[in-house]
Length: 615
Image 1 (tube, one colour):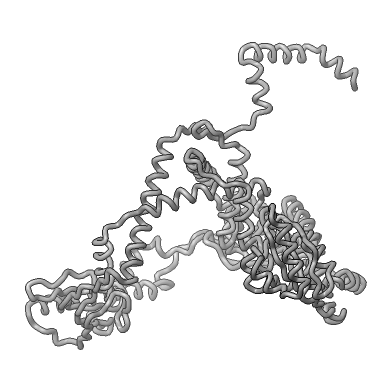
Image 2 (cartoon, rainbow, N blue to C red):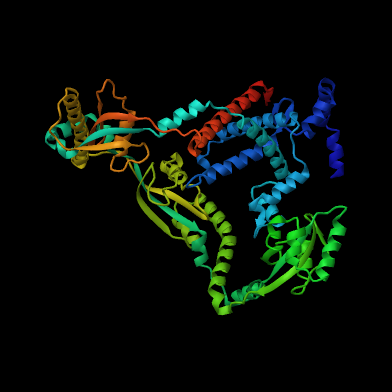
């Protein structure tokens, strides 16, 4: 092989390549050549700082995952990748602008500050206490490293400080709050005359000729869409688990493995936490001397412990098993006898004195009690391992086959059939947009191929093919005439209600009183509680013009099957207590809105003045 390399190095092709490299070096320089291999590519530069391609692609992946999680039926093909990339890049540019602004203002968090924030986050706690293991697992679950998460926290926290500072500067004139509160508390006096579809039934009629005419003018509305009858195979992890035979020996082995877990020991600890420092040893010695003198551990915890939450409970931390506390704390706790107090134990939180208050062990269930549960658990585990393998086999077999019978027989699966699947979907699993789109693709619909294997749910995959295609069909008048009649009747009813209401409004405005129906009166009716009123009537009553010159305002409102004539007789201004809690709440709400507007304007200013180069 070495000789082949030497021979090729002397060939004409090799000499040409070397010549091109020499020309490149002479024109662009060594840095240009080496930089292309060693430099990290960037997608944009913001005020001289790069947004790297790695950061961009990772954020695109995270954003795509989040959009899929928000879907009822996650389907990657429904995500607009170009839009995601565009949105992510703009978001990263905005983030860079805000981060640089925070740095310019000297804002930042120390490592100790980050540590303190992380320890306070409930998602990183077990039984109310910070768990390093929970922290690491949670961060990994979102696809981030610990250092990357800490850097993200540092950026977000300082930018939020600026946002909070600007948002709190929003100013609102007291009169604005008073005006809004007065409108909110306003009440109105009015009468309502209600009309129903029955009141105009004698004015509504739809003839057969009208139905036929509507059908002819709107034939396109009365078409049965194209449909397919399909065959499909469903592969699910759950169904796969039901076919797996788990032996008694496997169940017994799993029970024996879990025996120690079932008999889990939990220890109830109390502690006194002292901050590490120059005076820590002296404080610890004093506490130990007072304990030896017979003083209560709980009272000393309340006096000395800097863990103020547990100190109020005499240092009580409750029951916990292994894997919850810091390793040094755990080793000391599980080495104690009941009632014993440890020597000083140093952790990242400080120095502890630990008391073992109690020990409890859970009872071990019998094998017979757990056999069924363990058998199902083992079947699910084996199915999970088998599912990926069978899924790949089904995907390959369906891709190469001219039907579904062969792949189904090969893998012991069932071919099912469904009729009448439209482009808008059908019954499950054809309620999945991605599967339906595959069924109506040209290759499947016209080429006669099977669909790709589509994941329609958690560990559920489907492959399908078209059995029969049905062209769009024009529905006959006899098929749809009752639907048309109902549509025309509803339209005519609404028109009749409107005409009747207009007539009644005219009668009232002329100074007469309508003979029809009975009035409902509402005095000092507020906006919030409709009560016996329909919401659309209440909304109309508060949208009407104020009465003028001693004359009431009159108007009507019409819905699909009801109408109302409204006579507005008076408007009562809402009470405003400038010293009350309601006024303060409205003022605070308006100030928050104004502060948010100011922050958005500030954010836009930073973005507009930034030097951004997109690559």
